[in-house]
Image (cartoon, rainbow over all chains, first blue to last red; front, side):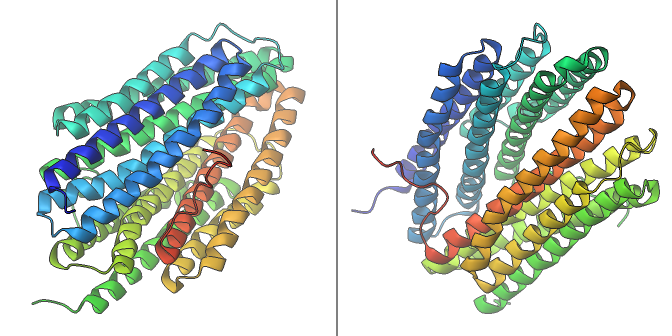
Length: 221
Length: 221
């Protein structure tokens, strides 16, 4: 009944990619539900989160079994440990998509406040970071992982733009304070999704190069 | 040079507790820097984050070595895997404290907007969740872990109160929009800190009982 380790490793990668695509799809649909004021789409995001949660538990079981049954080489060990943490990040991305969908359900009760130019740009950037962080994992591509880390600054920049515009609206017209605030929460959720993608990218580099690039050592101890 | 596994496990717990106390202290000081408009305290939080980051890397190395050198029993394996994920959560709590400290540095440039009653309550609740999630880990105390998970709802409730009050201020007086918004960001950071403590508590239960309590299975498949 013992399975070949390479095959198990391949299956683990495949599951992480699948879970990543579910998470990315959840993010995209949740933002669409805000932009299109679609309650149906928002409800679908909430329902589909169940599949992401199930997948998380399945991946954790696989990780535990792989560690329990085999004495792994250092590089495989780092991959399996990274998979365990990345799994947690992907599940939390799903949580954030649900938060966005819940904002959508509240936003539809207010008049539309603005044409939403930066929010979809921010969403596309965050989605591509999720996708590329997983591609970096599967292909052990540290260049791609580094590019994900750099793009986090772009997402933060877009977030600041979204904040500035919405706060200006609020100052000009106090009746839009509540709906504009919901869009601020959506931008915060997208920021957090990009942070999770950045965490994944950092784990990929740790896994591949075998030492830590997350924190540069201080100049002096 | 081989060390006894029980001793290594003890040291790993001790390091996690130490890191947890550093993270809890960072949260407390960061919120104090907002409440007291103290730039010095805010700068100290930013400086002290280095120690948390160093600790994260040390713990990750310990985890890797413990998995590489020993074939672990299932329960020890779950503990070490949980330690790896909890380590990541603690580091991110440190990140959130730094974000709060950075808000403090911006807030001091504006006039004080309100007497801050709910924000300190929210902070104390989040800090106690961090502390108790780590105590639950070290004592394998699932009751305490469950109480941490329950308290997350209280923090979310306090966050909603903070939001409502600050948004009402914004509607009444457009000149406070920017400083009130900084306090909203602080509340969001505290919410996220409580989320990390909840993740730690969930990992503790997974570790102790050996199966997943994070997601209840849907009523029907």
